[in-house]
Length: 386
Image (tube, rainbow, N blue to C red; front, side, top):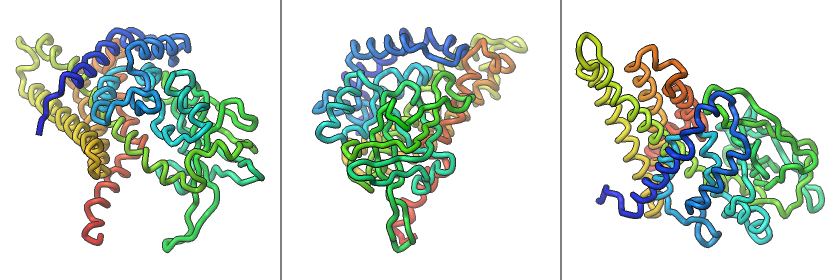
């Protein structure tokens, strides 16, 4: 096994990190203060990302994307994790699920998203259906060649900047040995479609400026040509893609943890108490040892999971383990960082309190820690008949 990065992989890391430090870090304080990213700034970031050659790096080259494999893209996402989510959302990464577009959909949705002409938002979560996707109440009924959608979605990330939404809704039920279950279908719905409204969501302590929105559908009529994939096959379509989002959360958690550690380590040699550097106290030095060990372990878990996908090996459990461990590691690292800084760590003069707040949501979205533990244990027990 080879653990060193290739020259090309190291170039990805160095290029993206330089971009993040030069183009994104300078705007973070203002985003924290105002809770928003001016659209002009977002478009400027997107344009610079295109010039860099990394826009839509996750999309295969056959669809005009950058064509990075999963390991390479994980390295890219790890570096983006160092910066504010509100700013990195403009670093073009269209939803990979759009590669399921067929025919006219490619020209209308996929290719404009790859070119940065349109932004998408994924809409799945509902007030009464978060992790329980099959429990969604937002539904669509067939009416001639059209579908009429009614219901509500919430916690829809960056829908405020999206030109269209990738919406999963219930489209009927079917009987199974375990009882009836809802059929799910995915639709591509344009902003401005009659009956479709995007409203501001809730104020969150995590990731200021990276807004969640509420999507309302009131007799929203959508033509059958805007079904993504097959009718009633949306659950399978989602499952084929959701592993990528879990891995993204894990890699970004690692990147953020490394930035936190980079702030804390030199501080322990600069700050003096009782006549010596605080890093010389075992209570502090052991914290550093635990922090870097957990960061490295999370890093290896995420990169290993990405590598397994590229090798076409089973990776569901490994991705769940990476998401679980990396997000919980980030919570511990940010908390310990504040402990080392003491009272100043909680002041907005430093970014640590922001990282601490931001870390909290990572254990919830894209599959809670409990869901990841369920996936892991299920993968272990099923072969044994459990």
